[in-house]
Image (cartoon, rainbow, N blue to C red):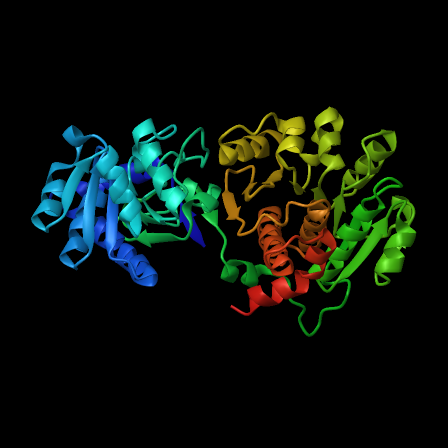
Length: 477
């Protein structure tokens, strides 16, 4: 499990460490780690020239000290000074002593960028908010135009380090080197950061409780339900699925099938698509009416049920059963409309799985801070919120939060959410608490999408079919 900290949490820890180490020690340690990654990237490309994009302050200082280290190892270094009067003086002097040179932003700087094999983004890092200024944006555009990779120092400039949002020109890094701890940008905007390399600068003992965590394969494998020698189909968890309608029968097939493939227990289906579910998944116990569904340990409800009176009655009937519930799609919209349904979800373990538009119907606009929005909704509704997106956020009412940064966007396809609903419901039935059911479900769902797509468009049925392979890949670690 990887921990994520806000900029302020990291800054506070840095101040404590800085008070007891020699001046410049932390920056030199960070810069050495940065130089190691930069040299590796240069070696991979067969390159020998680096351009440093140097802003004011410590972020530019990190880039300059790393540049001095690289120059001492035979790398050609040009420091592009976006604000020469405010460049880190000691770092710039170190570059010049090592044989590098500094140039102000302008035509000579643009030519240096164009000749480089790697660009270090030391423009603003964690201290910056808002888009790149014109001079920096123009130089970054040169690197983009010529296909020169950018290595971000701590955080891609122009990308908000606490929210991952972008509001104008910014850096899209080939890789990022960060210091002391992961920050929200590294998981909320992973596509902007590239692979993130964490350099230890001794902050660990001073860091507080993390802002969020990122689950790893070992975390998921340790909690994924595995049948023991005395288990049977009932002890492994029986999940009910209430999904689909005459208009959206596929939702029933996708959610039910995902529940079948996610665990080894039993799936019961209740709804108008019973015949289709039986035809595709003969192991599912399917009935037309929830009253005939039998006993379950959890329910998945919402995909394709509609938002009319029939959909409302179905959701109310599921919530009337004293078991954990995963609510998705039309179910989330109904929660937004009816206070009595919102009151019902607050009385039992519930996971809701909205995308941004569904979230807005039940908890207001997401806004730029996805972690904050999910936490706010979880506390207000007293449910576990799984806010779907390229970076999925799972928040519990107690504030515990995880982020799952997806490696692919191929899961953003019709029916993919229905698959996730089936997985989460099955995990709830197997006994996982809602936060872990949502987090592990999101992890395996994303892995299944990655395996199914393999770099090409993929339908949700293929994502569903890849669930066993995804589980095997997680458990193999």
